[in-house]
Amino acid sequence: MATFLPLRTFARTSLRVTPLCIGCAPLGNMPETFAYAVAEEQALETLRACFQAQINFLDTAASYGDGESERRIGLVLRELGGMPASYVLATKADRDLKTGDFSGDQIKRSVDRSLKLLGLEKIQIMLLHDPEHAKFEDIMAPGGAVDALTRLKDQGVIGHIGVAGGPIGLMIRYIETGAFEAVITHNRYTLLNRSAEPLLDRAAKLGLAVLNAAPYGSGILAKGPDAYPRYAYQAADAETVERARKLDTICKRFKIPLAAAALQFAMRDPRITSTIIGLSRAERLAQTVELAHAPIPSEIWPQLEAVGHTMTDPEALRWR
Ligand SMILES: NC(=O)c1ccc[n+]([C@@H]2O[C@H](COP(=O)([O-])OP(=O)(O)OC[C@H]3O[C@@H](n4cnc5c(N)ncnc54)[C@H](OP(=O)(O)O)[C@@H]3O)[C@@H](O)[C@H]2O)c1
Image (cartoon, rainbow, N blue to C red; front, side, top):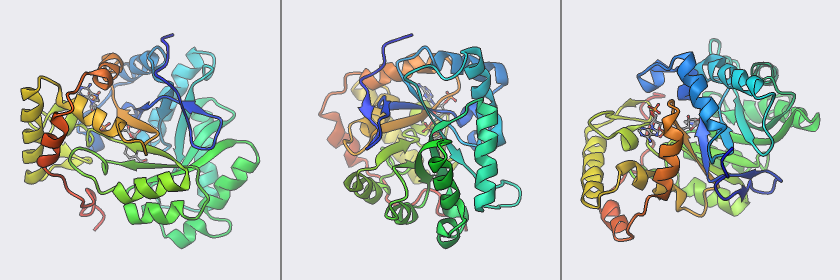
């Protein structure tokens, strides 16, 4: 096993995590989200490589491939004889994807299935996933989703509760309830989109662990705007593609990969506890650590900044 990157305290908990976290959404085989499929053997090889890498933190969700990501992680955890010491796993409790049911009972069912698929008796971090698909009042009601998670925490089935989702105003409303120790934002704090700024500020002030997911905007900033012209799981608009091209040109001038600038942009921010990167190939683990350590001259940042970014919600049109 490799030595981990320097560990950080996960907010007020006793957990210690690396500044990088492996996002296991692509490993759940989600062609409708990422526009490519990931076969089981490729996912298992990638997961085996995760447990040999310098990263001790994995993120998944009940809904990734409707259980497929957790099932594949569970297969590798069984090969390893359970969760290796010093590793931290976060997963997320989901609504019923077919009916939209986001009740407390559904959350219990979701957690139960995660435990079975992962082959674990306890989950260290459980996040309420994408609560934008329900009403805040219903989620927070007695007997509702958050109540169910709190009870599972009291029973020792869950270690810590967080919230993960899209719309920034709603995420701020959730963290201000005091029910959560961690928050995940995604695709909203990147070289191309900074709409999560107010959430990062508020979460850091409240002392939550802040996880910034999708620093590549779901792939465009890693694979490049011509190879993968998508942002936040949909076709990128012309302005986003144009800005990504300009960012790429600047990076080429400095002889650094665009992915290194995108990754280090997130990792430099002191409000962020860990940056969650999605990947589906074993070689990505070494590449990611290399990108995180690539020397980046300080003069590049104002030039990248001058390209501009949006403060608009990248999924605003999706939910209309
Ligand atoms: N609501 C939520 O809670 C929420 C929402 C979104 C994301 N997340 C979490 O955050 C994670 C990250 O988000 P994401 O996966 O959507 O987006 P991302 O990390 O911005 O980008 C993932 C994409 O980047 C590619 N990539 C990664 N490293 C690369 C490299 N070195 N070279 C070339 N391509 C590279 C991957 O390709 P390959 O597949 O080819 O490796 C994948 O297509 C998710 O997996 C999930 O765990 C949570």
